[in-house]
Image (cartoon, rainbow, N blue to C red):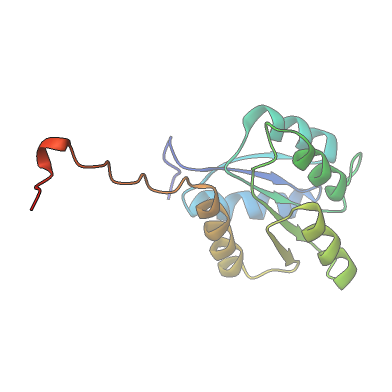
Length: 146
């Protein structure tokens, strides 16, 4: 399935080329558009410029690590509301806790089940959708007084 032009944009930050290719392929097959970076500085530049609908962020990357990228994303008004899922080989409780403290919405360890990744990605993107508008109040002409 090819992504529609208005499909949610997912930014993938991953330094391992094979894993990056796998993630991008699966995410695009699920109907999302993607952009990506292979180090932390590129990730921050891309996230800031594109303001994606969600971010899949590795921790162990060159330049700025994923924690620093997340900290920077949360520190800027333009990017602070972008949902982030940490996708990393680091599964220690301390790493998970640190990522959540910095503002990650979710955390998934490698190796990962692609169905679980796509389910969590769908949930991540839904979090960013604005709530449905409230019904407008009735016009004065529509109000019947008893």
